[in-house]
Image 1 (cartoon, rainbow, N blue to C red):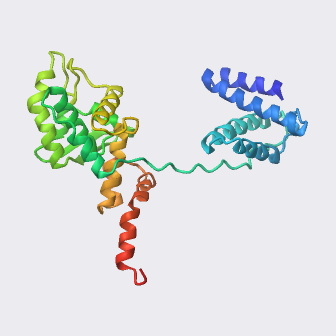
Image 2: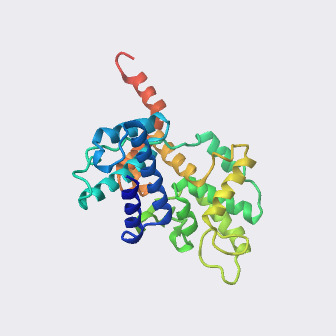
Length: 297
């Protein structure tokens, strides 16, 4: 089988132009599969492989403890290899075609509870420009459920604090309007009035949040700021990142009765199924409703 694997990797490199890293990944998967076939079934030729061999191999890998997502990657490599062999007449039929990918369980998003979010926000009490900036950034991220790329990429002209809206451009270059809550509006206004003018330099552009040199904040720096502020608040910094506040925004809205479709719109999710992952967090409200209204509670 090794000769066909080598020819296939050459095809990926020369005809498909795929990256060296991807070629290496596929090589490792196929070589591991070929070795297992030889050791387990004493089969060394591609023509000998049947569908049950592939499912047995995946079962063995699952028994080794690898994640379903990694199993899917291995199966994709095996599928494209045998499809390539079949198309070129190097073997009869495609034994991998009937094999279904393992189901990957959706990972539930981690969140902060409302008390911890309040603790994080209220811990930034300084009046220095960077303190005011960081408090405004935290408040706005949580108030509007922004992605970190939206925090860095939004400009002053996209913000209307009088009416309480911010316009952001998210994934797929889609623009949406999101409400900005009262606390966040006040915090951002303090930053714009008292702090941002002190950070502005001659070449500063209209990004809302800027660094001490007047330049645009990078996403990496924002992640670092969130960790630093969490540590100061006595919250595990390894847990806290910009997307955690976005998850918490959605979770707390849902828990307080907001409609899922409205949350979808504010988050900028193209598919309601993406937003539905937040419904897991509403267990306490569901139990309370059941306890209050079910006739046999």
